[in-house]
Length: 180
Image (cartoon, rainbow, N blue to C red; front, side, top):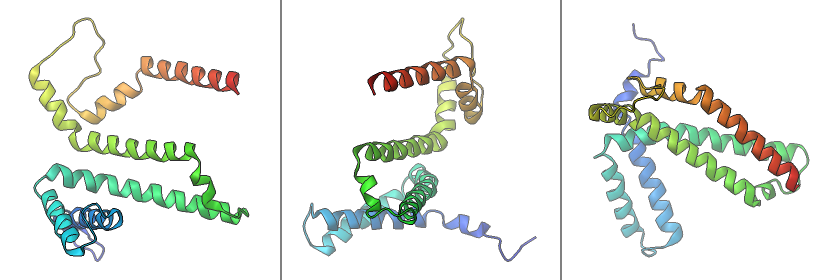
């Protein structure tokens, strides 16, 4: 049954947003850095060619459609953190973002989102390709199945991995407390 809020028809246009996003991002980058020059026409042409190239790969479209909401959530989170600093009385709330450690955290969050996107988009197809080779290691505990997401959960929550994370956390805290 159709409803006034049925947005299922928008799934047919899921390729438009990544194309527009790539065009806008690349055009802004070319204009700001002036790598090729100051000509808007040349920069727009290069951005258009790159954006239309995205249409050739369904994988790239799916990857962009997966990672954009996560980057939007991260940006909203950091903007709300700045507002929270301002509410608490910070004179320069953006000074916290100038710290080198914060840059590394932002880079780590971006890399984590990209890795999750590649896992979501390419994971099952890579699993099926590796299953066709039929490589089996004897004497090892297997967590492999036919579902990629189930394999990720089985690996992350395997007792050996959880034990390694506990040992790693102990090492990190030990080094931090002994050196500080």
